[in-house]
Image 1 (spheres, one colour):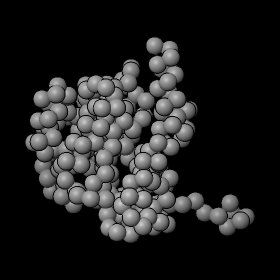
Image 2 (cartoon, rainbow, N blue to C red):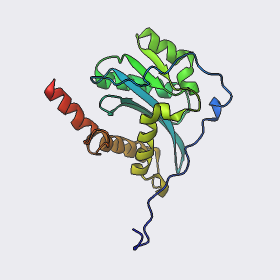
Image 3 (cartoon, one colour):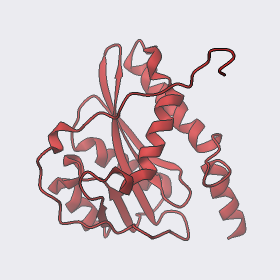
Image 4 (spheres, one colour):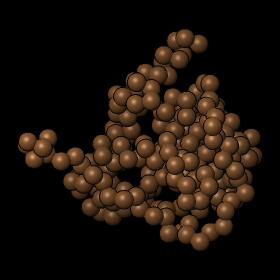
Length: 200
């Protein structure tokens, strides 16, 4: 790489969620610290990110199965609102075919909202949250978004419409789930899930 003058792509720093600045700590503790699920569909970790493109900005919310590392639920919206994360959660429940036991996120306003937390508690889901200013406590999603945005290729500003962007998001998540080798799993999340199912 040095001989040919090639440098690795380096993304800019993660955008800050201004709505969360100065907010008090939530009452929900981190329930997944030091834990590891023994089968799929038990613990989900969630987060969302901002994606700029030619026509403006959209927000992508995802939920990952902590056992398989598969993105089981996602939703795209042009609005930075609480419905973004609940729609992604419902997509995850539909994919899994069941309700998870624990859902872990950061303390973003979308996740600490009464509508979101009451929904999960009503469904019997235990709400888990990272401490404020502790992104490593949701490192699974942080790592996913780092790789996701590189794979999506946002630095080229190549999306002319919202439809093109949503299709690219779908393809990139599909690539991550089915083909991209996860370093911790030594295979793709879908392959890991199939391996577990065949052994169960």
